[in-house]
Length: 242
Image (cartoon, rainbow, N blue to C red; front, side):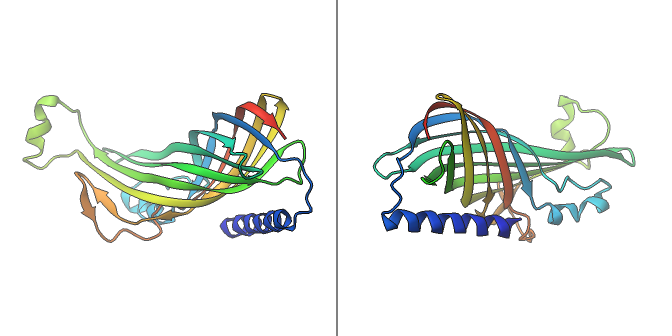
């Protein structure tokens, strides 16, 4: 899926660029500005993390993705025809839990990203906006692991740290930089409302992991990162001239 998306993205970008440079398009430039809430479906690679789930006594985390909420907006800059800039962001999480030998065990996975966006809207497609571009920004992955038994009391929180406890938790986190290709389609219902459907591939850079109070975590599998395919939809409100 990743390779297919990148091939389609590259083909559209090369074709639109060559058409623009040929000077033969003759299309009216698209313009407008809009923003909206974008429910998003994220599909990260869970294989590296799921390899440890059987030994922990839990089912695997879902490999077909999970739901996230986000927002996005853009405006055509008009200096360059059909070029628009904006921003987007999303965050979501998934988890698996169960009772194992009397312990309440749980693993939470959270992924979020926010980025500046730049897109070129294909001028030869009328009555809608089909845009290829990229998002440039950053994000983070956070993994929480819990193994608890019994009840918690504030009076015991500090004494538990000085003696063996039946309650254990770990927090792993990694921040990343991303440059990710995107493909979006905006279909106007009226002059001020449009339906958005699009997607992209979150390509992440940076593999430094931290644990607990910002301590370095070594030997993390390289596949355990934020690389993710995502699909987003939503209603955009603004002004559209497609």
